[in-house]
Image 1 (tube, rainbow, N blue to C red):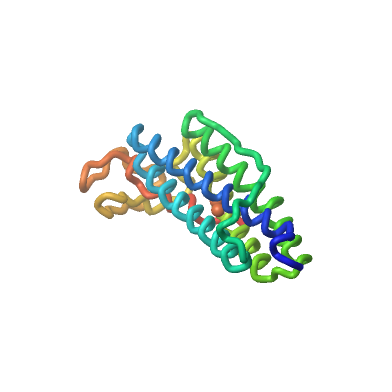
Image 2: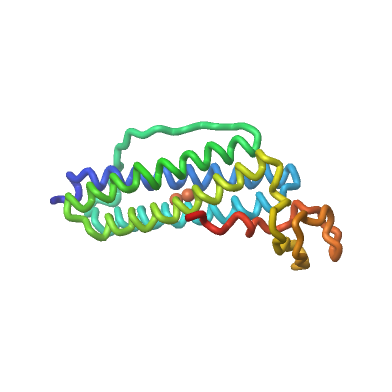
Length: 198
Ligand SMILES: [Fe+2]
Ligand SMILES: [Fe+2]
């Protein structure tokens, strides 16, 4: 199938636009977290924003690879979700978006790419969907822990690590202030939520 007439071309453009928006939203959340001195949430969203921009680049490159008309405007019709709220609610919205990307949107785009004979595109949609699933699980867990007020507590001792100085202590309840550099617990890395659930 000719790429110019394919649905895959439109889907790639939609995915590119979606990833750019995702990257922007995550940078905004990082900025909000910075204003609220939530250092660890800021760092997490900076990393997620970087991931989304890398996905945008993958889609961009695929369009350039297959299209003979890279200078041509591609018209797309798509939703542009707008949410501005408290950080915890923005995390919930973000986790919902990640879920729909990895369970619905990208798998269907991969299937269409396969049907249209663009196996390389299908492969990238599938691989990015797996990353979005990791993002979903991470954000879902972060939301649940924030909501339950249990971001810094665990039933079994956990290595709470200060991201500023690296000081680590194995505890059920994290230190309020780092005993070494005296930064607040907002600097504790969010590694404890980074293990994807099965
Ligand atoms: Fe992404
Ligand atoms: Fe994502």
